[in-house]
Length: 145
Image (cartoon, rainbow, N blue to C red):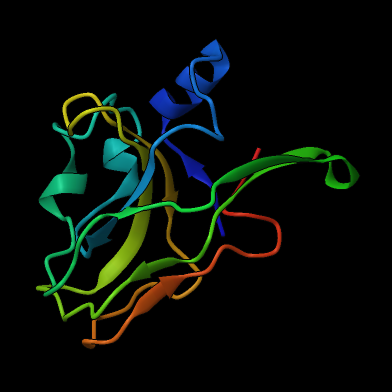
């Protein structure tokens, strides 16, 4: 999965203010029209095209990452954020196809929560079909740092 990091997320990480294994990680799906380059410098979710193009298919809901771990992979000289597969249950068709997932850190609401990573391969784009859509972290984790 490509790692397109949002600049504020990298900044928070550099300050040491992000605890990978205890943060409240969540996922937003976005539709055609969303462009990462337009939002890469935002510091919260409110002024963003992320919310403008948030997926709107039936049964869509933002998902919380489950069973999050952050481990050192000394063999590959990195650390990896892992989670259980992210399941969007019974996802209906949206106004436009879903083109990416935005991994973000939830604080209290959209005004202080911030995006961390744009994921746009591994099954994107897709249309909801009324069945489950699943993002499966690969063997190297959801995020590699």
